[in-house]
Image (cartoon, rainbow, N blue to C red; front, side, top):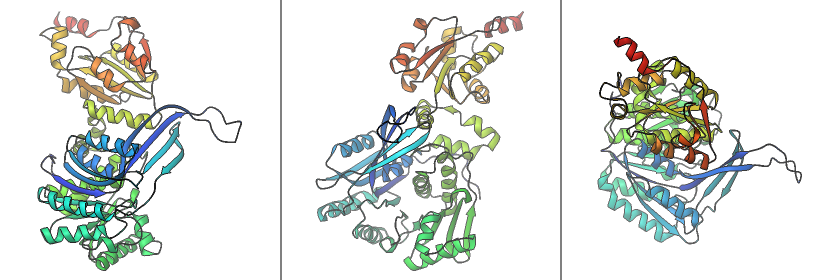
Length: 486
């Protein structure tokens, strides 16, 4: 059974309810130990926040192209307002955040240097929802459910489901829609009683081991434990995520299916479960079979663990993973939209990597281009190429150019090992693209002076550097075309 060759989740609307939190990342460098105590001194260079917990499920649904209605509870505090601002910025998300005065918005702060996490600080108070809050959540469920095809309950054990709200929601949805409406639960803890009546539950192997009360040392034991909780709590299916071992879907004692992990390089497994739930939800909303949706989720998880932190997976990345073989996939995934490039750059910076940028038409790749790109790659850890679009090249070079289309030029550049991303821009200069990316190193040929390099002042103002690369004499696309025409 193969997945659809073209993915489109724009008609999917998911109702998501769960514990939202604010993830803060503080980056810097460590070059000495404190004289006051044997601890490293972190010199901070940047920090940012993203929504995490159930908020990461929301971000992934949105980045996969689906629509999401999100209901959660926050504190009446500054982190709560920041959380609200982040969610309001997601165009295909409608948010109902109920602020409670006695609640503190959960915030997790991670301190990172040289790609390694030094410390995590959790600022939270775990409280059940007030009775009035529960009533409001149930009212919102009743109002929004007719618009939705799938319900996701994301339990991070931060309080929203601490009483019997989860059971009340499931019972309400069953009363309103019957037994066939998909309810996906991402569980926490050892008590699965509140999730009774869910369609699908998604424990990872560690969580399944905890509820089974014994070590699961074989695949047969995993299937048996999953089937036991399926029968005990009335779940239609159980999907066990198993890291490097992939996924196992259990729908009965003799009905278990397994798919191997689709992982190229693992940087961080945090948030991968959120990606699985999001991909499952949009897949089921678009009428994929349960196994097709699970395979889609497995592919998405393989992309997610190649990133750092609570990252999202885009529809373009997922489409590329499904539509290409491994060898061509690597190049195809390098050609990015501006939005995806910004997300990719954030991932690299979370790893402590230096990001470089250069731009050009790259119409006919020649030795001069290769020399420039080699110097760029030597100055950074990851290199992004800004590529003039066909219309832009025509305005700059005349009606006879470009010789090759933007798609061809982009994929030729992406095939080079020294190039990590290619972004096509429509303007005559890459100024807007540079402002969006804010690279650490901006590279241009030495036939320019720094004051003439587009975007140099922006990069320098944000702590970056400008490098003038030595040019290879006697090599240019124009001269090559002239020789071909003579």
